[in-house]
Length: 64
Length: 402
Ligand code: HEM
Ligand code: SF4
Image (cartoon, rainbow over all chains, first blue to last red):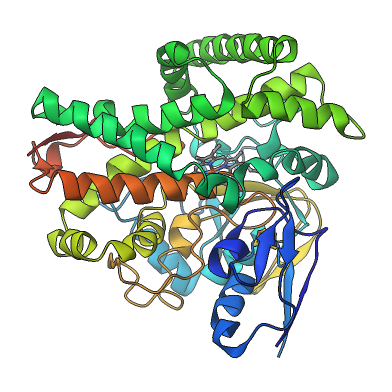
């Protein structure tokens, strides 16, 4: 699994950081998404997929 | 604009048999007419979008504008051509909306809000203590549901708590439909004046609060906010962060009391609290009239084409009961695997305060049902006074005892 994010699209809702805190964080200055792990390990795939579905701005893209 | 209409009416009431269920009509719309033309109380027709996938599609689309009165479709006295005031985060689109939202997102990030957890717990504990000391029956709205979120948002913004009564009263008036327009206008003016004083005070004498940080962040930004914009933005937070959580606490408590097995599950397995809160947000969908938008570019949706200039209602309450996404959708199930519900909306305007709302709700329900295990309604459900006419669904009062 390979994750990419679209910082410009992100609206800082934090759904990703809540669903998959090992993979996503939010910048301290403006709450915008930070990708912690571009290639999450298999045990994180489900949570990463959930984060992508939850994101209200479609700012998380997965290549599997 | 107000041609007489033979179209079905926008479903404005909850189900006849159950105050927690959206209008029965929604199921028919989802099955037979998912992108329907309906007539609204204000005398205009709108598209009513009722399926989960379609609601997400339209709210995620840049072909819609939020620059309409948020509940005009449900309000018989709606005025459609009021200008959007500068700083109205809920009603601005595109880059103008992003400019405001980005000044605030840091304040509501997961980490920031998690750090408030211990403090929020203290606020909850002291209110539950006071409620227990006073002895039942009490009105849970006055005892917990209103003061807890109110205190939390007032503290966050740096509003002196002594001012909260004044603020609460005006906020309740502002969020009602069917209220005398003169009284509504007065409430608007009064609360704006109050927030204006607050903003001026924080400009003069900044403190360790969101309002002061917002002012500083704005000053450092390429196009700083005007005072009018600041006032409107702070007002939006105050109002949005207040009524919503209050009503979720009151309605959530009521519905849980009707499902003792689920309360028992929460007591024995506190790990279920996060999923229980998501489920309550889905099941209750307190922004019950849905979200009102206008179409700015032609877009196809299902078998229809939405045309620029049309009105549209994205029915959150209907999408959240769509059985193709949520199995047995009309059942409350605190063990339901979390899915992307629509209770906080979707798209660029999705609730900014959602992390705060989650933490407050998780801790209120966690605390209330453990500390007051014998909690029960003090009147039959039939006698409860539901807020059918407000932007946000809820209860005027909730008599409980233990
Ligand atoms: C359970 C409680 C809550 C619910 C159900 C709720 C629901 C919603 C919904 C549905 C929207 C989207 C409106 C739209 O797209 O037109 C929204 C936006 C918003 N909410 Fe909440 N909300 C809650 C709590 C809060 C809290 C605690 C705050 C804190 C300040 C807050 C602040 C906001 C703001 C500022 C917006 C506008 C965001 C924007 O336009 O970009 N909400 N909320
Ligand atoms: S869920 Fe989407 S919009 Fe929200 S912080 Fe993550 S990337 Fe940004």
